[in-house]
Every structure is written in C-alpha cells, then in structure tokens.
Image (tube, rainbow, N blue to C red):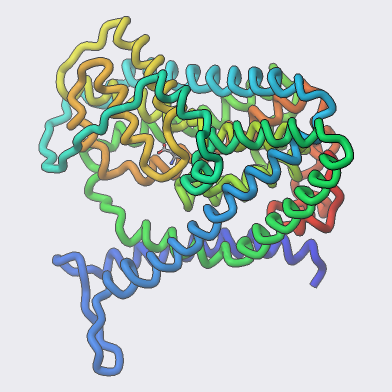
Length: 453
Ligand code: ASP
C-alpha cells in the first residue's frame, strides 16, 4: 500500500470510529432498562452494561486517548514557539503579530456574541418556558481583570508548564526564543537542538494519531450511551438556535473574513479543517486538539511556523467564538425564562463580559458554561439558570469547540497572509490531491522539510 493511501485510510478509519461509536453507544443506551442499566451473563459471571462498557472500557479508552494528546500540548507549544520566534528575522515583528492576532480574535468574538444576542432577542427561545428543573448550579468567583493580567507572567516557568498554563508558557517561550536569536553562534546551536526536539515531538503526535480511530470510537460511544435525549425536549429551541448560530459563524463569518481581509478562497480552509474538526468534536477541547490544529495550519494551510506557533496556541487559549455564542444566547434565554428585561446597557455589558469570559475560558470541556456565571452575575441574572441548560451542554460544547479551532486557523491564516508568510500554493492546493493527503495532519513531519526552517 502506498504511503498516501495509508494516510487516506487513517482519516477514513477515524470517521468510521466516530460513526461506530455513536451507533454502538446509542444501541447500549436503548438496551438499558428502567434503572438505567442492564445485567448480562458471560460464562456465569454477571456484568452491568453501564459499569462494564460506559464506566469501564469507553471511559478508560477515551480518557487515555485524550490524556495522550494533552501530554503533548505543553512540550509542543513550548518547543515550536521557541523555534518559531527564533526564526523571525526581526523580533520587533512579534509585537505586530501579537497585536494583529489578539485584535482579530477579539473582533471575531465580539461579532459572535453580538449576532447571538440579536438572534436570541428576535427568536425568544426562553419565552413560555416553565422551570421544572431540580439540578443546581453554584458559581465560582471570577478573577479580576488585574489578576488575569498579572497571571500571564510566570514566576516559575516549570510550574507554568506543570500546570499547563498556556499564556505563561507563551510568555516564557517568546522570551526564550528572542534571547536565543540574540546569542549568535551558541544560539544557533540551541536552535538546532530545539528543531530536532520539535521533530521528535511531532513524531509522537504521529504515533498517537495511529490510535485515533479507537480513541474517537471510545469517546463517541460513551457520549451516545450517556446523552439524555429527554433533556432536549423543553429546551430544543435554545439548543437549535445555538447550534444554528455556531454553524453560521463557521460558514459565513470566517469565510467572509478570509475573502475580505486576505482575498483567499475560504472553501479551501473549511475542507482542510476536517481532521481537526473531528478531533475538536470528539474531545470537546481546543487544548487537546492543539497538536492537530497546529499541524493543519502549517502543513495544509501553509501558515509559516513563525506565525502558526504563536497564533494557534494563543487562539486555543483566548479565542472562543463558539463559547461566546453559547454565552450570548444562554444569557438572553435565562433572562426570558426568569422574566427579566435586559436594557441596552445590560446587552452591551453582556458583549463585553462574554468576550472577556470567552478569553478566560480554558480550552477544556464544559468550562464555557462555568464562565457563563460571570456574564450572568454582571447583569444580575440568577446563576442557577445555568442548571436549565447543563443537561444538553455537552453536544453544544463539542460543536462550539469545532468553531473555536476553525477560528484559530482562520485568524492564523489571515495574519500569515498579511505578514507575507502564507505559502499560497499550499493553501490553494486541492485538498483531495495526493500532495495534500501526504501533508495530512497525520503525515510524518520529519519526512518533509519545513518551509520556515
Ligand atoms: N470546550 C470548549 C473548548 O475547548 C470551551 C467551552 O466552551 O467550554 O474550546
């Protein structure tokens, strides 16, 4: 079998793993009896379906897979950002890069939450809703803005890495890369070593990707076996509105920005995001998807490493447009359910706090909902309202994570184009060509020379 065929097969296998997981998980869910479980006998031993499959095999397999991806995030971001920064011809470019990236991230988030508010006010998903939930939710205190800024600077970089604090790691890596570039001969040697370590880490990504079809299977099977479809009934209009807005943001807002700001064919980006989207969807975590997002940006979209290694990890940390959409709709929904009228000042406050909340949302499952408490508190809405939507949040979380990572790649592409470091041929290459299949996220990174090296 040729190398290209092997790559294609892996993508196909991951897709099959996802569908098989949904089918088997849904089948198990249907086979549960009234107690939510079913006992079966194998060779005289009694097994609980729930315990054996859902809490057992699916949880173990899925968690190990996600942990294996997360394991790579800190070393990959640190090493590739050091390499990226040191390969910049002019370190002062970094300020401009940072400014453009943060500016675009904040702008797309503001657009997202504004549309979400307008649509939710027009469609009124919370009208006529009768509160009958017994679930409870209590809020954590949100950190102050001053604390958020102070927390970006590490007092101990090893601690930052141990905790996976992405902004602190970025700050340290940028400083390290700049210093390395200023060290002349010695710096060049260290840079070479970092390049080699980077290749080794990307090789680990490749090894783990081989296991992706099984990992995705376990994650989806657990999800399908545990999703409570009955919970959708009363809040279907909320669910559908958020879902529709997420899709619209990915298919209308990002493509428009790509055309207007970078004069690029947006279809290329959307099609090339498919592997990354499957991972974001099944993991619900921009952070765990980061190795794949980074690889897609560089190898499929042609974003030079000097931009990708900075903009993508930054985006996985602060850019959560999908999360902001959910927070905008959820705020209006909860206000309508509790019969509270939001004034124009309240709505502006929601735009501001939802943007800040999504910046402060870590790229891990479900955090967007926790940060929603901060938005609700700002406009004096009852935080317990979150309990109304918690039951169906996982599916929306999966979808908004796809939007979040698509936003990261869109902004990285626009910034790279504006800096003149987007490889247009790679970006425009037919996503179904043999060349692109070979540049799949699952390709061997050490087999192809890096354009930015
Ligand atoms: N799961 C989302 C992400 O990782 C964050 C959230 O909205 O909860 O991007």
